Amino acid sequence: MNATKTTGATAGRRAPLWSRPGVRRTASILVSVALVIVVFWYFIPQFAAVSDIWASIRSMTWLELVILGIATVWNLCTYLIVMVITMPGLTYPQAAVVTEASTAVSNTVPGGGAIGIGLSYTMYSSWGFSKSRSSVSLLLSGIWNNFAKLGLPVLALALLALQGNPGTARILAGLAGIGGLIAAIVVFALMLRSPETARRVGLVLQGWASAVLRLFRRPPAHGWDLATTKFRERTILLLRARWHWLTLATIVSHLSLYTVLLVALRAVGVSNQEVSWIEVLAIFSFARLLTAIPITPGGLGIVEVALITSLAAAGGERAEVAAAVLIFRALTYVLPIPLGLVAYVFWRRNTSWRRPPNTAPRTALVPESPIPEPAVPEAT
Image (cartoon, rainbow, N blue to C red; front, side, top):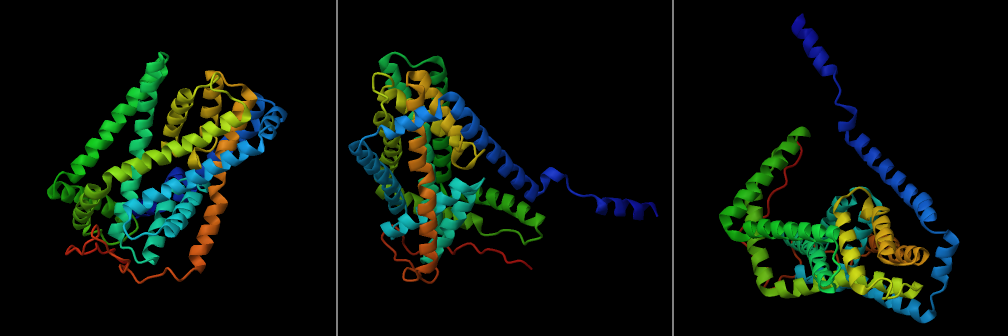
């Protein structure tokens, strides 16, 4: 009888409310919305009068608008180069569709980065690219992107030191960036050191994935050791041929994003005497590190506060700084959302690019491999 009561009590227990996925996602959305409301409806109007901000925006000349537009278009195009470099056989139109669609998801949904990656896999698969080719591209572009995020503060710190005014906080942030960059490089190097190391990493990841699958009563994952070994082989082959182009394209992509902010500042009247281009680079690079913490989609609200307060503290006039940051975020955060929606609709309707699985054109950097694709277990 006691055993029956115990079993019944155990069966009747529910998981803690916070542990339920739906509750966590709802809470994350509410926190993001609340933070955005606080920033845009309270902080910015308190920081500078909305009429003054709007006056700064309207003060831009047609020439300044054209230059800003050119910088924005170039910024949108630079990441396509990174994707084409890391995915042999991918065309620039395909890179534009997958980049804009996944960016739109990342910018609108809490935790949208993971959903954006899933959408990228789906698009690549519909165009005949294998999971291994897609993984190499997404991982390498992501790793190099993080290298650049960690490396730019180091560069900015060095330039500020040459000016003689780095500041204690910036020195500490720069040192943290150096430490993070070194750690990331070490982990990546260990992954590529030997086939045995890659195999062990795959087995560890397979164990974690199997533990998650057990929660959903799915069969365990398998074949991940073969997948990581294939990833290592193809990554080494690609990096030997294109590491320098990948590095250059990634740096250009990040500096192009910085250029949009710099042009916006100069267009609304923040001069180099008020905030130098080196100070703008330092503030931009440190603010970019905040996007690594997925509190809100794309750091919405958080990045604006960091940029506005830092640029004003550096010497910029409040209304002009707020205007420039809002313009910058409208062009680099908001604009990709409708572009991504158009890209997604185009992908859904366009069938001329569709190919059967694993039939995308191969190149010398994507050889036939005797290692099979890891099987994905089906639900039983």
